[in-house]
Image 1 (tube, rainbow, N blue to C red):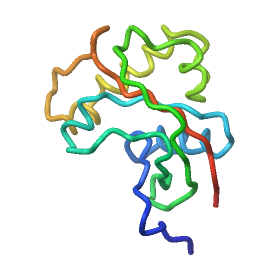
Image 2 (image 1 turned 120 degrees about the vertical axis):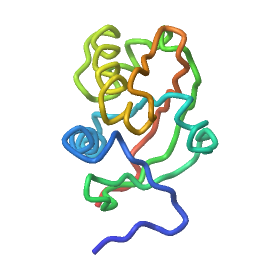
Image 3 (image 1 turned 90 degrees about the vertical axis):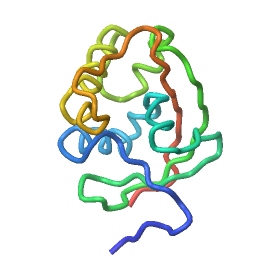
Length: 141
């Protein structure tokens, strides 16, 4: 059984379930080399922003460690500034920024995210600040 290295934090893509499983598979295949979160998530969790060189353990829906990734770029940008390269590199098959935005709005406006946030009416707009990460896969189990 593989255990999480004690000195590395977890990387959790989405909430446990089918979406996380899809995203983790994309990380493991090398298709996913970028990800997006909202700046408010870090603020609400009291977590500092990642910095280049940070390493973390990717966990699957069963909270099992499956990979180690390393941050290669961190940007904080309004959603309107997300570019096509980033959208494609998320590894979810987006072929346009509009498709990326629609997919992410479905997540951020969905019951899991709104429930976690505690705001059933939460919505994003062009000015919502996003934390845009690029990473590389260092190890997979």
